[in-house]
Image 1 (tube, one colour):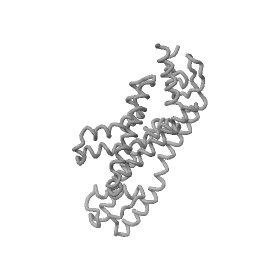
Image 2 (cartoon, helix red, strand yellow; image 1 turned 135 degrees about the horizontal axis):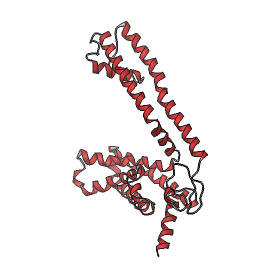
Image 3 (tube, one colour; image 1 turned 180 degrees about the vertical axis):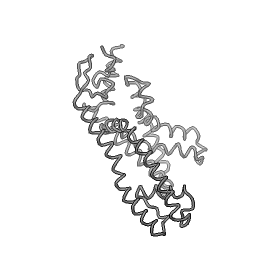
Image 4 (cartoon, helix red, strand yellow; image 1 turned 90 degrees about the vertical axis):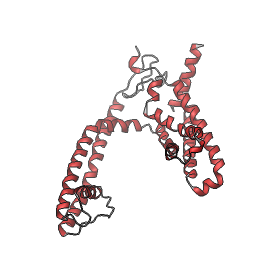
Length: 275
């Protein structure tokens, strides 16, 4: 009995968490379809004209998709090698957020106009993050960003110092006029100009102010490329690390595991605890 349960969990694990089998690929395809359709339902429900005509049908579809995602969520918990780790992982939290808003709205049916309930129901849009299940390179990107955090933090501190300096200079140059009524407002202008957004609500009038604005715009284009370069270098390094070294499961002998893998892709056993 215990062995049959173990085999069932392993089979479900391969179907749900892996896509190297026909059933696994079909599961991914149908899950992708359900995610896209459920997001479309949420978007249609936000349109007053559509909601007024098809409200009951949209509610029925919403419950259908919630039921599907609920089954998926508890099945993932059942077959996950480390259930606690899955529950508090990024994907586990997203899977939970995909189903809980509908149940909360059902529990408080007379509170649909409350802003809190409306905000919680809006969380259904975050089902789009469930698409992360299908982005195999997502782990590579997250790992590269994590490795780049220190450099990005230093870069952001440099930007903070720069906009404070530029905002203060513009406040002096414009003599506290033309929208530059305070240093914080001037810093706000420096941020939107440096990022090349340029709302146009605050515009320098003096010749020196226009010259500095032009300089900041050109500076912004060159600065934007810096964090991109930082992450790109780390992605290249991470990709090289993950392709040059594999972990081997000493339980079933499967060798094709990346260094970032924690569990065996075949038997589901924890790689760093198998002996």
